[in-house]
Length: 520
Image (tube, one colour):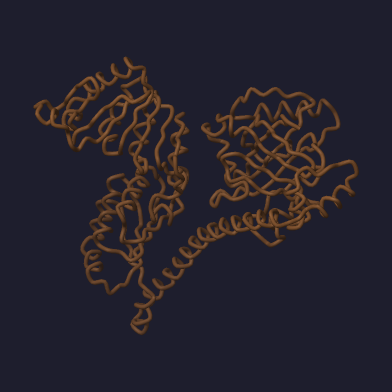
């Protein structure tokens, strides 16, 4: 393979040159240098990394370049090892439609000069990893899962890959499944159980080899398949003991229901015990599957409700509703008609909240307590997602000292405050576009500048809607600002009006975001 290197605008572009023009074909050198472009053979690059890196460093310095752009991952693989040596480069761009490989991400985080990476597809779990090392990732297209393996096990975050204890494999495995399983084994440190459905000997050997390669021990592989599979039974009979002894990996065959039914009369007490174990395992698998699909169903249901709400707002003529509202609120003028229209969906609708670059774009409800909408949605239907709601002590028709909004952290399906955790990422909270919270009521539209983001052991000290003294308010402002994971450089005073977004981070902690009113 020949690699063409061209200078274009502020970047150095690397392209796969499969066909050389006539003048290059007539030259005997393994690499070519001209005024317009450079051509290197892949053999020359791999054998002369030091020379190539020195030459590229001088080229970057001479032309004051900041960006390296790769046509595809094959070309990028040749140059990833030397990026750290090209100190002036801070931006990496991958042009192809391919998914950014984890092995590239692993090497790039060691390059202290790299600050920004752009690719067509970057898996979500890599965002957390890159952000941790101060690299801002840009995925030009959203990708939730890169393979059936990742989707089946809900592996969308680096945290879930690292701590996963039990996984499921659906054979036969695709090349993407195998690649992601390798990445999983490289990151994970806790997996102990693997359940395999419809097994085949070839994939089973691949899985064992990968587990061995990444030094995973004391792993139990449960094989769910027909016991009449003679080839599989023979393989297990011959190899199970040696695999367990050599690799610390045990293989267990779970009998199918069909086999148990056909051989019920022949079963001994041990067979009955195995059937019970299988039943318990099936219940466990069903429970895990139910949780996964319930979250997926919940996400779809919320999306459906959101679409229905928007249709209702468009279809509703709010004039009569507005007249009634303005009569009840003498001296106030409804400026956001769509909030008034929302009351036809639910009379408790009082506002609308939007947080940039999250899924938070919801109607806000309020009732006479802070419990009801933890368990019911905007249609007053029983719903584990609940809905976002305003603290019952807040006044929906005025700007209180502290407007407090609650919601469930549905981390898995991303609904309600399920994406509020994004505010903890450096790449999110340092982006000025994300620092503005939009809050609309019937009587006004408001913008709040984020000044504090933090997690805290469960406490009520930030849940105060209005203050009885300036001293109390000053203590409150000083406390919540000092907790922030980042200094936003925002000054507060006793006239400051605050909005607070509060959700669970764990059983014993809360994730809290505060903003100060900048436009009224």
